[in-house]
View 1 (tube, rainbow, N blue to C red):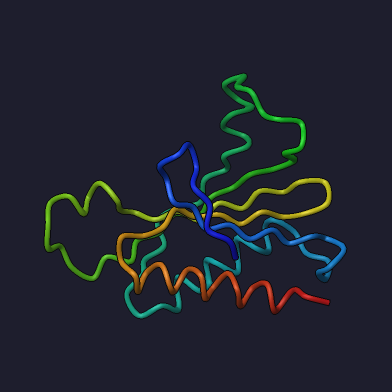
View 2: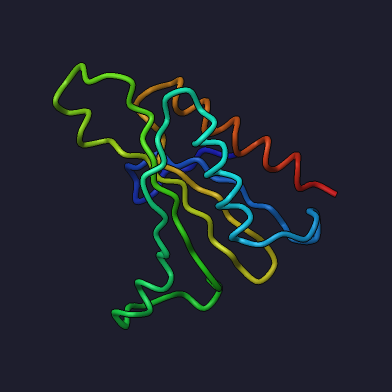
Length: 132
């Protein structure tokens, strides 16, 4: 996993899984994996699935040629509300992008270290499960 900065201000965690280095899988299987992790978490709650690729396609938006598919799983970790600003950073989303030769898994860093560590752990566990 690698931490990057998107647009000079947004901390994003990123993992690239090269298809040649993992067992055969699909974007849907990756999203399903995250959904199961969310549902098995003690207080995380699954909210929705968002087909980002189809949405952009349906509004005739621009999609770079490398992207074959892009989907998001949306959920919330929130065990409490200790500040009104928490609504600005919840819910969470993990994006999965399919390219010709790889899958990219990305999420914005959470304000909660525990939530962030959990998403990193889920992603690293997936990586280990898929490795050949």
